Each structure stands twice: as structure tokens, then as C-alpha cells.
Image 1: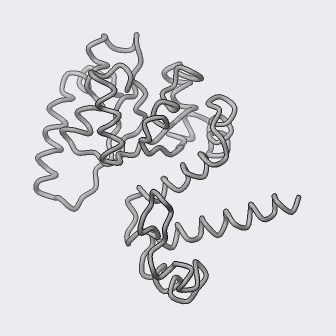
Image 2 (image 1 turned 45 degrees about the vertical axis):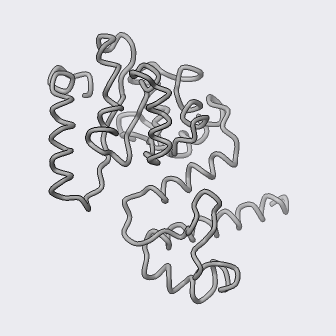
Length: 225
């Protein structure tokens, strides 16, 4: 647990160890548990640096939880840094409610969205939290006021920032511009060149499949099915 005595006492040392290992293995992607803390769980000073050091010292490209971000030293600068570096935050709404008692307006999901920090929904441990992805999406809508387009973006983020082999489907992710092989001029997502590109890039294959699923779902909804 992040609030464990060893975790709290040696956190900075752990981040420096990971930073050292990253120099030896620069091609290894780093995802870290960071910020699964809340007031009352640890002393106030324990809330001020975990996310910052996971990102700034250890070089994490993804973090899990990130609940205490607004208690960090200079949270505005930290959030801007995370947005600039595109550090994705795995949001665990059920787990954060059950373990930390953080839900509704107290949860920082809306803050992350406002700062354009990439986020994606996840379940944490399904067996412990008694959760699954459908519930997480429902809680995002009912408790956080997330709309459909934001849910789509979260699902896209879960693949764009995944540590999956191969190149992305997107040449410009911010504007959802596909690579040339999958552009309209080349026949689109279902064209032969895109199929060949997806076959060589597992990440692109998953992303193309998601986009085609979106199209099919939205067509059914538009048709009243």
C-alpha cells in the first residue's frame, strides 16, 4: 500500500532507483502507482510529492490513481507538466470510493480533464473492488458528469498510451488524423493498405478495431436500433 510505512519513508529513494534503471534500460516503459492517498490516511506532508516524483524523477509515462494531485506542491505546474508530457492517469472510480472515500466532486477526474491530462478508466483490482468496466463508465457519467465524447476519448487514450507493440493508427492524435496508409485517400480504415499496416502494428490494429466499433455502434443508435 502506498500509505505503508516503508512506502512512505522510502518513496523518494524508490523513485531514484527507477530513474537509475531507466538510464540502463531506456526502451522500457514505466507505469507507476502514485497518489492513491487522501487526507487522514497519511500526514499532510505525505500528500505533497508522490505524483511529482513519479513523473519528474522516475519518468513514469503512466500513473495509477493520481487521487491526491491537488494536495501536491504546486499542483497547477504539475498538471501542466503532465499534460505537456502526456502522462496518462489510470482513473479508478470505484476503488477510490471504496478505499479512500473519494468520490463525486472530491475526485480529481474533472481537474485532469480541464488541464487536458490524458486519462482512461480502469477497474483497479476487480476482485477486491467488485467492479468491472461497465460500472466504471456508468460511474463516470452518473457521478462525474462525463459525456459520450469524453468517454470515447478515454477509451482511445487507453490504447494510444498503452504499452502495446507497434506504431499508432494516428499520425496526429490530437486531431485524430490517421497515418497515410489508413487515410481516406488510401481507402480508409477498411482499405487494403490499412489492413496491411494494422497487421504489422498491434497497437494500430486495436485502434482501428475500436474506431470501426464506434462507427457501427453510432450507426445503430442513429437508426434507432
